[in-house]
Length: 160
Image 1 (cartoon, rainbow, N blue to C red):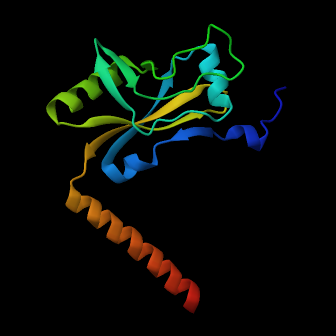
Image 2 (image 1 turned 90 degrees about the vertical axis):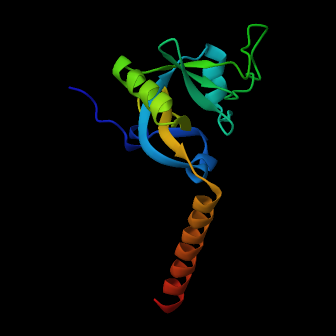
Image 3 (image 1 turned 30 degrees about the vertical axis):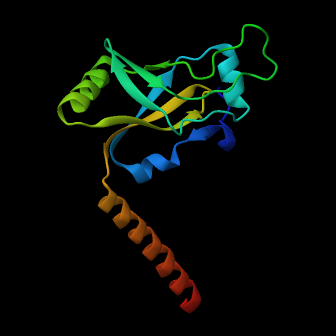
């Protein structure tokens, strides 16, 4: 008989988050993709190091690559340590890759990583979004809506 899973292990542990992406882009769809990492990269991510703030994903030769993501060198690594800003291959199904290719080429959309996390099985995953860029007016509207929500919550708290 299998042991029940502890609730702590049923969650995902977010390592790096691209909070700016939700402000800069309209998020159309999100996908979960595996990521090819070396041993020292996994160890570095498990320590909570890593950044995807300036990164993006691109389709090359039928494969999706995460470009410009920074996973710093592992502090206890030896001479076989990894290169911090190397392109990393994302693992997706062919149908998803074909969908991404069509959306990027025809509709002018962008593949943006939203977060890197470890799932309940301990595998490193990337939350990838198919997104469309916002212009300055859209960003101002987003700021106004966010400020209004804060103000509304503050008023409700005072009178509630």
